[in-house]
Length: 439
Image 1 (cartoon, rainbow, N blue to C red):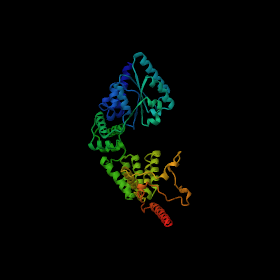
Image 2 (tube, rainbow, N blue to C red):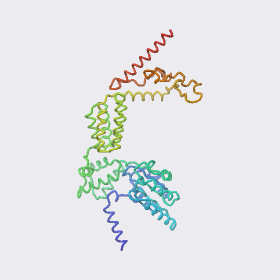
Image 3 (tube, one colour):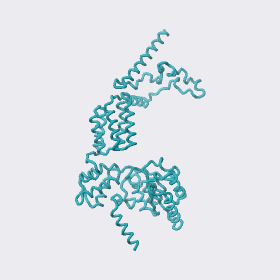
Image 4 (tube, rainbow, N blue to C red):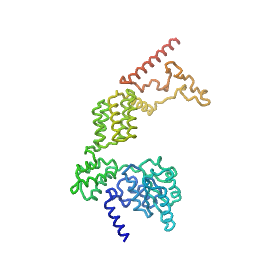
């Protein structure tokens, strides 16, 4: 009777479970996405099908299927399957699992897989408690983490585990999940609603199913419309497909380059409202600061990097203020691409074989015998001169006439141009005096 009530309670809980939990696959064949791991002939699938999976770490962003994969393995393997969450479990729980695994192995010859979710939440001591059982084969550990395991998982445990990197779900996988979700909910959705859900998924399968479940509840008893999806997501249905991504990013960069702060902020707002990855925006601004502003305003790079750091520290929505400030600074800054042209042209020369020998007076003279080779001989130390600068040859002789960096007259770079010109004239007059003395 107790078993009957327990089974009924379990069935009721399963029926009331969130959509993402109800759709979790029972076998490896039911998994959506991560084809690089579970596709036909791929490594994880082969290990699971042969029931030869050794300890593993599943690493990837939220909603990419780490728990899903573990439960699919549970439905495929002949081994016992135990599950713990590092958020609530402690060393005592781990030891109890190990004891059951030893008993199971001794009495029935049956192995045990322990799935430990959020393994990065375990302290070093808690992770060390697992090590002996993993080493001697009592347990096969599957750890799941959103954090870099090279930082968050103890080296001895990590070295005994195979690392599987899960990627954000691609568009076809997200659309397949939506289709399954609609079938499970017993409803339909308009093409616009499905497209908007997929656009805003961000590779997170759990999030898209949660949003779909909320939209279904709002739409009951009718089909899901764009309005229901918009309400479920809590954001406006801004059109932002793949083409829009490239177009808006392009317009953002070109508005920065064109020194138009109004358009710059407009496109920044569109990207943020559409759910564009804020880290991507910050990276583009850091690149822009050197490529398009450069030495015309050296502080631009500092501002862009500071905005990226602020994003890491405070996150959105607050970091929109930092991104806005940086974008306005870059848009209104004087522009110069001379620093970018310098490295592009220099690298092209080097690729084409224009290298030459390092002048002898610039070569390393710190090792024994270097002076006898002429290394360092004749080198003049700039700090010994009143101006902190001395005219001497730095480029290889073959490239001595090359001019990779030619400053513009824009912003702070005009001062650089003046300084370089003054030094060039000084070097020229020095050469004239030398020729006069020799004559």
